[in-house]
Amino acid sequence: MKKKIVVALLLIILILSTNVMITLAVTQTDIQNKVNERKENEKKINEAKEKQDEVGEQIKETNKQIQTLTNEISQYQNQIEELDTELSDLETSISKTEKKLKEAEEKYDEQQEMLQTRIIAQYEAGETTYLDVILGGQSLWDMISNWYIVSEIADKDNDLLEKIEANRNEIETSKEKLETSKTQVETLKNSKEKTAKALENSQAQKEKQVSELNQEDKVLQEQIDKLTKENEQASREEEILRQKYQAQIDALNNGTVKPSGGGNSVNLGGSGIFQRPVQSGVITATMYYSSGAYHGAIDYGVPVGTTVYAAGDGVVLNANWRDGGLGYCVVIQHTNGLRTYYGHGNGNFYVSPGAVVAKGQPIMQSGNTGNSSGPHLHFEVRVSPYNWSYGGKDSRVDPRNYL
Image (tube, rainbow, N blue to C red; front, side, top):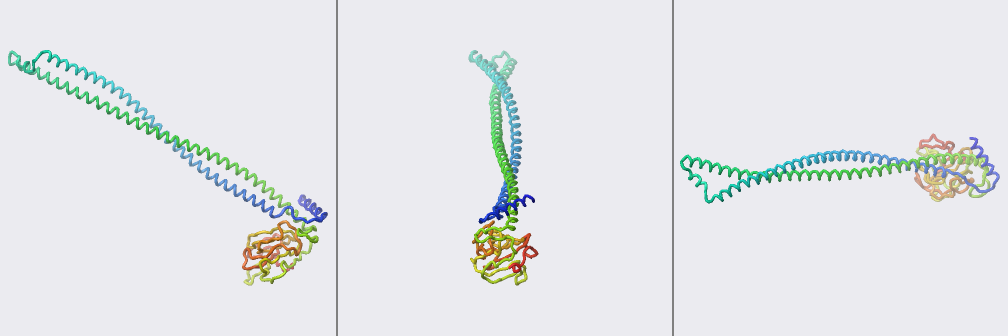
């Protein structure tokens, strides 16, 4: 509080000791710019947080996918190990079977050699035939005995030939089965290995994606931290600007300064009596409309482009578009806590926020902007705290009491 008083006194001394045209060093526009800066930062912070949430969900989902891939890879690796074991067992079986096949082939060679030996022996014996052997007996008994012997030899020859043929077929069948089984197992193993490799590649891509998302999350967090610090600084600067602005208003309301547009000195500590804000036009509405609805102002029916004048000495707080239906509007702070509002302008202003104006100084042109049913000037007078509402019971007072 002491600081505000000191600032105000210094400003008053400066104003009274000089005879120069001034405007406020800090205006509501400056404050609003700082507010806009803070709001823009808040918007960026919220956008970054929303993006961060999205990134977090992507990281969570991608990690779940990685875990699923890890489980699938583990399953395939187990299957590959099982196939390796099966392949090893099959190779052992093949080795044993090949050994048996070798023994069978040796037996086959041995049997074949025995048959060949007997055939050669028969050949070397001359033209002797089985019939010669049978008829060569001395008696009937000898003939029967010889016939039995010859039959046995023939049967043995037939059995030997059949066994040789069976061994040959068994060797070929065993080889085919073993080679087919081995090929199938190797094919299945290669398929499993390719699938596992593809899953590993997919897992590596997912892990890379998670790494990139984590980096994006880090960058977003850095942006949020930076914007948060900037916002804290903007809030502090906004508060300083508000204090400076209020100190200036307090000082100006108690001092005598030259208006920004030139002319004689203005005594901002005057009586608060206002002049008509336009030089022509009739009053078309007062504090209440003809319907009985609350209006809270005076309307002057004037054409678009009519010059509007400051109703009293003061400081311009606003000279721009204003929400709430007033359209392009000028707001002037006067003494004794009074403010005047000039609404529905056409956008042509002669003053800017922070300018000190004298009673009767041109400030803007009238128009038909905002919530307006036709060209006119909307003129309000408000007292502190300067609030308003559509239904009345606010800070607006009848301007006719001050004209």
